[in-house]
Image 1 (tube, rainbow, N blue to C red):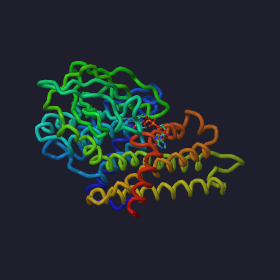
Image 2 (cartoon, protein in one colour; image 1 turned 120 degrees about the vertical axis):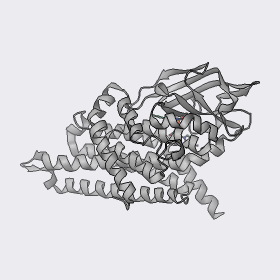
Image 3 (cartoon, rainbow, N blue to C red; image 1 turned 60 degrees about the vertical axis):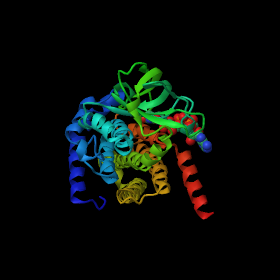
Image 4 (spheres, rainbow, N blue to C red; image 1 turned 30 degrees about the vertical axis):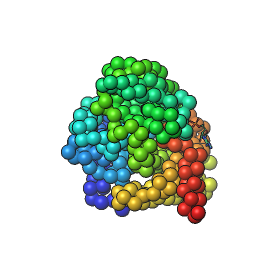
Length: 379
Ligand SMILES: Cc1cc2nc3c(=O)[nH]c(=O)nc-3n(C[C@H](O)[C@H](O)[C@H](O)COP(=O)(O)OP(=O)(O)OC[C@H]3O[C@@H](n4cnc5c(N)ncnc54)[C@H](O)[C@@H]3O)c2cc1C
């Protein structure tokens, strides 16, 4: 365990117990059926976790990146899919509103998002614009007393359940002419046009959103026209750290499964744990997981102190999901044929983790950011 404060240690215990009782027992079923554990999600509101970084004035817990990452790690061990939905709600929607919206907007939207009465999502990616998100084409046009929004948003986590969408749009022809809105379910012209079926993270609903002359009141614009890139920059680091937290949970779950299996499974009259090749695998994956933990929570501490750099957060987002994929592959290997089957959770952990190398910025995009920052520093 990292050097947590007493409050953070308590949070670990609360999350671990909730994950054991409310999340883990249902994870396999939600993966198989591609369904969302909405009951557990709503209960996260009762525990005060849905607004973990939001101001207590609106019902939030007022905590930082370390706390949010603790939740991701503990829930990620039990069901990465549900944890991804938790991340989309608490980091991509709630924390963005907390960081960028006006007092009136926070008063209107945060309390219900924080209790779990409402579910949140964030719409940035489009069918033709993913890594190049700033090229987005979903267009908002100002009319007399409202904006009219037309376009599509792709890969939106929680789309089918979202009551509130934190939405990025284009309001001008220059690349950075992007404007943010808070859009509500039920606004004229807003619909969920497609449900997306995935390799992993199947316990997290993903969909495409369509806006057809969607009428959004002026007061739902966040900040001024053209503010979106600034909004995106302000939330980037915590998004990257917390998604890496899910990969840490996945890696730890793989280690735990492997130790258990190596102590139970017998071949050649001995448990697997007696074989040095198996010992090497376990020793290495446990060591790698500990390295992930140290790098991640050290970076979260920097975030909490207002000192994390864009480069460091990108390094974490690059390295942790990659390491967890390797660990999950080793875990399948250690389980042999059973690891490749659906009887054991390690194949699911691999499928789930692969998303973390793509979502919230791909590995390649992280490499581009790190290299660009480092090379610019040296100029
Ligand atoms: C399950 C899931 C949930 C998601 N949830 C959300 C959400 O809630 N909200 C949201 O807005 N988005 C969400 N996304 C979208 C996600 O952020 C994008 O998928 C991601 O940014 C990559 O974009 P893309 O899929 O369009 O891939 P592309 O950008 O088309 O990339 C394809 C490949 O090309 C590489 N590539 C692209 N540009 C370069 C370059 N310049 N140099 C080298 N390589 C390059 C990429 O790394 C990748 O390997 C989600 C995606 C998934 C799969």
